[in-house]
Image (cartoon, rainbow, N blue to C red):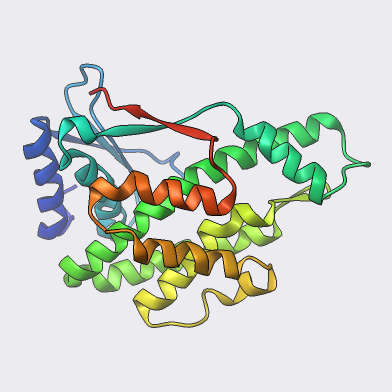
Length: 252
Protein backbone atom coordinates (compact mmCIF):
# COMPACT_ATOMS: atom_id res chain seq x y z
CA UNK A 1 0.00 0.00 0.00
CA UNK A 2 2.24 2.72 -1.29
CA UNK A 3 -0.40 5.41 -0.73
CA UNK A 4 -0.22 5.21 3.06
CA UNK A 5 1.24 8.24 4.81
CA UNK A 6 4.74 8.03 6.29
CA UNK A 7 3.31 8.22 9.83
CA UNK A 8 1.09 5.19 9.21
CA UNK A 9 3.88 3.23 7.58
CA UNK A 10 6.02 4.07 10.60
CA UNK A 11 3.49 2.32 12.87
CA UNK A 12 3.68 -0.80 10.72
CA UNK A 13 7.46 -0.64 10.72
CA UNK A 14 7.35 -0.46 14.52
CA UNK A 15 5.30 -3.66 14.55
CA UNK A 16 7.86 -5.32 12.31
CA UNK A 17 10.72 -4.20 14.57
CA UNK A 18 9.03 -5.40 17.76
CA UNK A 19 7.94 -8.76 16.33
CA UNK A 20 10.75 -9.50 13.90
CA UNK A 21 8.25 -10.29 11.15
CA UNK A 22 7.11 -8.27 8.13
CA UNK A 23 3.62 -6.95 7.40
CA UNK A 24 2.07 -8.39 4.24
CA UNK A 25 -0.62 -6.38 2.42
CA UNK A 26 -3.64 -8.18 0.92
CA UNK A 27 -6.60 -6.47 -0.77
CA UNK A 28 -9.90 -8.13 0.18
CA UNK A 29 -13.13 -6.87 -1.34
CA UNK A 30 -15.20 -9.11 0.97
CA UNK A 31 -14.25 -7.23 4.14
CA UNK A 32 -16.98 -5.41 6.02
CA UNK A 33 -14.31 -3.40 7.84
CA UNK A 34 -12.04 -1.03 5.95
CA UNK A 35 -8.94 -2.84 7.19
CA UNK A 36 -7.94 -5.58 9.59
CA UNK A 37 -4.48 -6.57 10.80
CA UNK A 38 -3.82 -10.19 11.77
CA UNK A 39 -0.85 -10.88 14.00
CA UNK A 40 1.56 -13.58 12.84
CA UNK A 41 1.09 -16.63 15.05
CA UNK A 42 1.65 -20.39 15.00
CA UNK A 43 4.70 -20.13 12.80
CA UNK A 44 3.24 -17.68 10.26
CA UNK A 45 5.96 -15.85 8.39
CA UNK A 46 4.25 -12.45 8.39
CA UNK A 47 1.49 -10.31 9.83
CA UNK A 48 -1.35 -9.85 7.33
CA UNK A 49 -2.98 -6.49 6.71
CA UNK A 50 -6.18 -7.03 4.75
CA UNK A 51 -7.88 -3.97 3.36
CA UNK A 52 -10.95 -3.20 1.33
CA UNK A 53 -9.95 -1.67 -2.01
CA UNK A 54 -11.23 1.89 -2.15
CA UNK A 55 -10.28 5.38 -3.21
CA UNK A 56 -10.80 6.50 0.38
CA UNK A 57 -7.59 7.10 2.39
CA UNK A 58 -7.11 4.13 4.70
CA UNK A 59 -4.58 5.64 7.11
CA UNK A 60 -6.99 5.96 10.04
CA UNK A 61 -8.26 2.41 9.71
CA UNK A 62 -4.77 0.97 9.36
CA UNK A 63 -3.41 3.06 12.23
CA UNK A 64 -6.33 2.00 14.43
CA UNK A 65 -5.64 -1.69 13.77
CA UNK A 66 -1.90 -1.16 14.24
CA UNK A 67 -2.59 0.41 17.62
CA UNK A 68 -3.97 -2.86 18.99
CA UNK A 69 -0.89 -4.80 17.95
CA UNK A 70 1.49 -2.15 19.25
CA UNK A 71 -0.21 -2.17 22.66
CA UNK A 72 0.24 -5.95 22.79
CA UNK A 73 3.80 -6.12 21.46
CA UNK A 74 5.09 -3.31 23.66
CA UNK A 75 4.16 -5.33 26.77
CA UNK A 76 6.63 -7.81 28.28
CA UNK A 77 5.81 -11.32 27.02
CA UNK A 78 4.55 -12.39 30.46
CA UNK A 79 2.00 -9.55 30.39
CA UNK A 80 0.46 -10.48 27.03
CA UNK A 81 -2.97 -12.13 27.13
CA UNK A 82 -5.70 -13.22 24.73
CA UNK A 83 -9.36 -12.42 25.37
CA UNK A 84 -11.40 -15.63 25.08
CA UNK A 85 -15.06 -16.44 25.67
CA UNK A 86 -16.00 -18.94 28.38
CA UNK A 87 -19.06 -20.18 26.49
CA UNK A 88 -21.55 -18.69 28.94
CA UNK A 89 -22.35 -15.48 27.02
CA UNK A 90 -25.16 -16.77 24.74
CA UNK A 91 -27.04 -18.22 27.70
CA UNK A 92 -26.65 -14.97 29.62
CA UNK A 93 -28.00 -13.00 26.68
CA UNK A 94 -30.95 -15.39 26.36
CA UNK A 95 -31.80 -14.64 29.99
CA UNK A 96 -31.63 -10.90 29.32
CA UNK A 97 -33.87 -11.27 26.29
CA UNK A 98 -36.38 -13.52 28.04
CA UNK A 99 -36.58 -11.28 31.11
CA UNK A 100 -36.89 -7.92 29.42
CA UNK A 101 -38.50 -8.94 26.13
CA UNK A 102 -41.16 -11.68 26.41
CA UNK A 103 -40.89 -14.00 23.42
CA UNK A 104 -44.32 -15.63 23.27
CA UNK A 105 -44.56 -15.14 19.51
CA UNK A 106 -40.97 -15.96 18.65
CA UNK A 107 -39.66 -19.46 18.00
CA UNK A 108 -37.06 -20.84 20.39
CA UNK A 109 -34.60 -21.22 17.54
CA UNK A 110 -34.94 -17.52 16.72
CA UNK A 111 -34.25 -16.59 20.34
CA UNK A 112 -31.17 -18.81 20.40
CA UNK A 113 -29.91 -17.43 17.09
CA UNK A 114 -30.35 -13.81 18.14
CA UNK A 115 -28.76 -14.49 21.54
CA UNK A 116 -25.69 -16.06 19.95
CA UNK A 117 -25.31 -13.22 17.47
CA UNK A 118 -25.77 -10.58 20.17
CA UNK A 119 -23.37 -12.31 22.56
CA UNK A 120 -20.64 -12.40 19.92
CA UNK A 121 -21.22 -8.73 19.11
CA UNK A 122 -21.24 -7.70 22.80
CA UNK A 123 -18.02 -9.57 23.57
CA UNK A 124 -16.30 -7.99 20.59
CA UNK A 125 -17.46 -4.51 21.62
CA UNK A 126 -16.48 -4.91 25.26
CA UNK A 127 -12.82 -5.32 24.41
CA UNK A 128 -12.59 -3.36 21.18
CA UNK A 129 -14.18 -0.13 22.41
CA UNK A 130 -12.50 -0.07 25.80
CA UNK A 131 -9.05 -0.43 24.23
CA UNK A 132 -10.04 1.30 21.00
CA UNK A 133 -10.70 4.55 22.85
CA UNK A 134 -7.14 4.38 24.16
CA UNK A 135 -5.94 4.04 20.58
CA UNK A 136 -8.05 6.94 19.36
CA UNK A 137 -6.74 9.13 22.17
CA UNK A 138 -3.17 8.09 21.35
CA UNK A 139 -3.69 8.98 17.70
CA UNK A 140 -5.17 12.35 18.60
CA UNK A 141 -2.30 13.13 20.98
CA UNK A 142 0.64 11.71 19.05
CA UNK A 143 -0.45 11.98 15.42
CA UNK A 144 -2.38 15.23 14.90
CA UNK A 145 -1.47 15.07 11.21
CA UNK A 146 -4.09 12.29 10.95
CA UNK A 147 -6.80 14.35 12.67
CA UNK A 148 -8.99 14.98 9.61
CA UNK A 149 -8.92 11.30 8.62
CA UNK A 150 -9.55 10.26 12.22
CA UNK A 151 -12.54 12.58 12.51
CA UNK A 152 -14.01 11.20 9.28
CA UNK A 153 -13.41 7.62 10.39
CA UNK A 154 -14.94 8.14 13.83
CA UNK A 155 -17.94 9.83 12.26
CA UNK A 156 -18.44 6.83 9.98
CA UNK A 157 -18.35 4.48 12.98
CA UNK A 158 -20.89 6.59 14.82
CA UNK A 159 -23.28 6.41 11.88
CA UNK A 160 -22.93 2.62 11.82
CA UNK A 161 -23.36 2.26 15.59
CA UNK A 162 -26.54 4.30 15.86
CA UNK A 163 -28.26 1.81 13.55
CA UNK A 164 -27.90 -0.77 16.31
CA UNK A 165 -30.61 1.02 18.28
CA UNK A 166 -33.18 -0.15 15.74
CA UNK A 167 -31.72 -3.62 15.10
CA UNK A 168 -34.45 -6.25 15.50
CA UNK A 169 -35.11 -9.93 15.01
CA UNK A 170 -38.83 -10.49 15.36
CA UNK A 171 -39.77 -8.63 18.54
CA UNK A 172 -36.25 -8.86 19.94
CA UNK A 173 -33.74 -6.02 20.17
CA UNK A 174 -30.28 -5.74 21.71
CA UNK A 175 -30.62 -5.59 25.53
CA UNK A 176 -29.95 -2.05 26.77
CA UNK A 177 -26.95 -2.86 29.04
CA UNK A 178 -25.06 -4.37 26.11
CA UNK A 179 -25.30 -1.04 24.27
CA UNK A 180 -23.15 0.57 26.98
CA UNK A 181 -19.84 0.41 25.06
CA UNK A 182 -21.25 2.08 21.94
CA UNK A 183 -22.88 4.76 24.08
CA UNK A 184 -19.55 5.35 25.83
CA UNK A 185 -17.84 5.61 22.45
CA UNK A 186 -20.40 8.20 21.32
CA UNK A 187 -19.68 10.30 24.42
CA UNK A 188 -15.95 9.84 23.87
CA UNK A 189 -16.21 10.89 20.21
CA UNK A 190 -18.18 14.00 21.18
CA UNK A 191 -15.47 14.92 23.65
CA UNK A 192 -12.50 14.15 21.42
CA UNK A 193 -13.90 15.87 18.33
CA UNK A 194 -15.57 18.76 20.17
CA UNK A 195 -19.09 17.76 19.15
CA UNK A 196 -22.36 17.20 20.99
CA UNK A 197 -24.65 15.22 18.68
CA UNK A 198 -23.22 11.70 18.70
CA UNK A 199 -24.53 10.82 22.15
CA UNK A 200 -28.07 12.16 21.67
CA UNK A 201 -29.68 8.95 20.31
CA UNK A 202 -28.41 6.95 23.27
CA UNK A 203 -30.23 9.15 25.76
CA UNK A 204 -33.55 8.25 24.16
CA UNK A 205 -32.52 4.58 24.23
CA UNK A 206 -31.97 4.75 28.00
CA UNK A 207 -28.29 3.76 27.89
CA UNK A 208 -26.50 7.11 28.12
CA UNK A 209 -26.03 6.92 31.91
CA UNK A 210 -24.27 3.57 31.55
CA UNK A 211 -22.18 5.02 28.73
CA UNK A 212 -21.17 7.90 31.00
CA UNK A 213 -20.26 5.41 33.74
CA UNK A 214 -18.03 3.47 31.35
CA UNK A 215 -16.36 6.67 30.14
CA UNK A 216 -15.69 7.66 33.77
CA UNK A 217 -14.04 4.27 34.31
CA UNK A 218 -11.89 4.86 31.22
CA UNK A 219 -10.76 8.19 32.66
CA UNK A 220 -9.98 6.65 36.05
CA UNK A 221 -7.93 3.63 34.93
CA UNK A 222 -4.32 4.50 33.92
CA UNK A 223 -3.96 4.59 30.11
CA UNK A 224 -0.85 2.38 29.77
CA UNK A 225 -1.31 -0.94 27.99
CA UNK A 226 -0.56 -2.95 31.13
CA UNK A 227 -3.88 -1.68 32.53
CA UNK A 228 -5.98 -2.81 29.54
CA UNK A 229 -7.22 -5.96 31.28
CA UNK A 230 -8.15 -3.92 34.35
CA UNK A 231 -10.15 -1.55 32.15
CA UNK A 232 -12.01 -4.31 30.31
CA UNK A 233 -12.78 -6.10 33.59
CA UNK A 234 -14.15 -2.89 35.14
CA UNK A 235 -16.37 -2.31 32.13
CA UNK A 236 -17.59 -5.91 32.25
CA UNK A 237 -18.54 -5.53 35.90
CA UNK A 238 -20.48 -2.33 35.18
CA UNK A 239 -22.36 -3.90 32.25
CA UNK A 240 -22.97 -7.30 33.88
CA UNK A 241 -20.62 -9.31 31.67
CA UNK A 242 -18.24 -10.64 34.33
CA UNK A 243 -17.57 -14.33 33.71
CA UNK A 244 -18.42 -14.19 30.02
CA UNK A 245 -14.71 -14.32 29.10
CA UNK A 246 -11.28 -15.22 30.48
CA UNK A 247 -7.76 -13.92 29.93
CA UNK A 248 -5.55 -16.61 28.43
CA UNK A 249 -1.73 -16.28 28.31
CA UNK A 250 -0.77 -15.20 24.81
CA UNK A 251 1.02 -17.75 22.65
CA UNK A 252 2.84 -16.45 19.56
